[in-house]
Length: 221
Image (cartoon, rainbow, N blue to C red):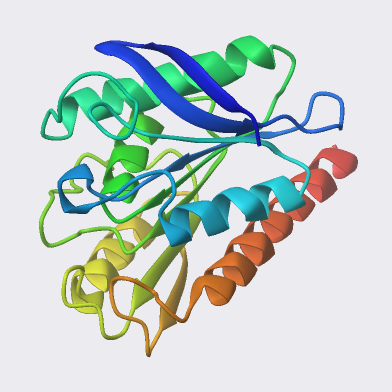
């Protein structure tokens, strides 16, 4: 889990990067919760998602957005943080020029940033959003959403209430060629304190299922 420092739009950014031993392995970028509420790349759910991708053979990065940990710069209300995510993606693609598969995974505020990045980078092939703050941010920019993904909500989450996330899922599912895999952990609040293993299992199940379908489709062509 080597530490990396890479150039961001507002100074150097600090990350942790695992390089897969598999040639031309798929890539995954993992985004942390809100920096003003203690969100860092070492957040338990962020780390759990990172390890899940590592376990599946991905080259994967998690990083601190501007002003967090040893990353330079200052919090920028989400706008600069989207540019930070793009810089992290650029760095991974530079290190892995022949990889043809890219996933983005975010928790809470990181889910919002991840979905914004999804709209800007057509090479992203799948996404994971855990507790997206659907009541606090307008996700109307997902029109149309480029691809399907996994959305996870906590049934007892007061910061990102399940009904708001369900409304977003229903809206996305009306779009052509989009089918959101929606999973609710009834006992989970926003921290998912006892549900890290469930998050890992859901992520791995979804990613493996979608990759299996893609492989079957390619074999049929």
